[in-house]
Length: 188
Image 1 (cartoon, rainbow, N blue to C red):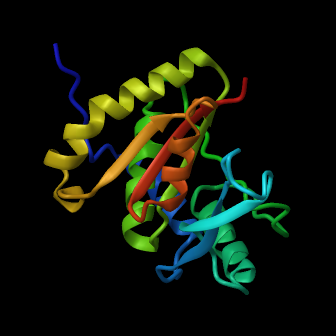
Image 2 (cartoon, rainbow, N blue to C red):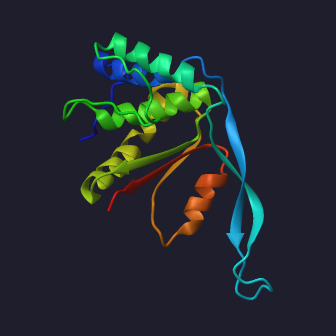
């Protein structure tokens, strides 16, 4: 048995459009930064760092906060929610009923935010090991759906991985790769 994914369920599209609406008007941009690596023990200056790579991150341009607030207010109005007077943070949530495809919605939102706004780094934080395993399974199961069934994502290069503190090279790769990266981690 193979699970079939649909890319056009109206309630999922509404949630995806809400996410995209928060960033409406944003031009593609990214941030470059130095990634330092600790020196090896046999180097002269033990404990110091060496800048040896360039990291690529997501960035909102300076001055985007006012536009961000207006976008959030527009999304809230469209969805019948009370409008915020101010933004207390840049943390946003999508609330959906159990079994409606939240994981699919945020994965599809990730791909669309990457294409529209150039965001390339995403960290999915889940509350438990069981949900973490479910997210990893969904990422695996949706690979063919996103690559083959949705033409807008054909050829999109991306990696996903489960955070493991013993594998620091994965985090370094996450920071330095210039294509879409998804890290899954649980709070515990």
